[in-house]
Image (cartoon, rainbow, N blue to C red; front, top):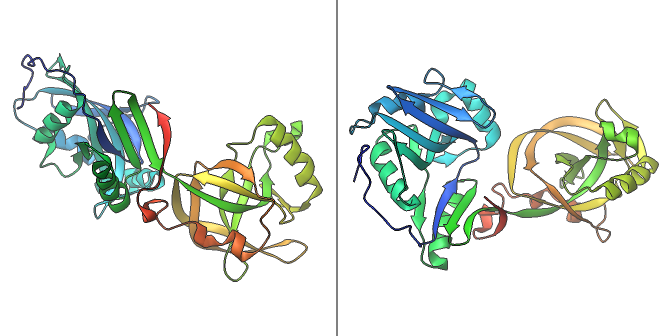
Length: 331
């Protein structure tokens, strides 16, 4: 039922737990009024219909709707697959047809605040945007049991590559994302300002290809407390074998276990350890970790292909094995 600004009928808050997919994009608050839609991000950036196709499509809603206020996510998709945040950022300027507006909350209709529960909001939003190509209601459903939850995860996170899910229930809102852990080699530490204070704030990590070449898999700073930073500074300075404009390189002796939730594909630096130094190799296509966190040092691992193999990073992290996720945060 489309209320179109009329007084909403009283409705009890739903006690049903529900799931919705989340996209790897940019949160925006959308205001549609006087025939014009604008999207505001967290930092005050304002997107207009001149920039985004989705905002132009609001004029096609009809149904007696003159104004809306929505919570949404701008993200990119291609061939029914949700894309990563870097791909979204590129699409905004280079391929705007890929940019979608994923709507997940209805705050106001024709000047009337919405008091109805979240499932009602999502049902209502589907009436407005069902036939609009660049505006989509993010996938959602009420769930009854584990089978429902797993089916939702497998379809939207595994199948369509959404970033994760948000759960809503009596305990509140929680975000769940895929989790992967790998063992990676410390090839160096970054030249940050912390070096002046005797601390290492960021590490450069690599994995090993079958032929022994090393390929960059990302940099890590999360999980390094002040004491660890100081100890690493003393140890890694002792192990230094070279440097470039950005990195101090160290002997391949330290391996750490890292947790992350997603990957980005692109051109990555590569090296070969000669026994005395790292020989720079041409860049190659590989993956970089998103939001990696240090878990522990792996003294039981050694500098070899079996312990540092690139195959630790699946093409679609955690999604490849289906229901393998981690509770990330409470919203």
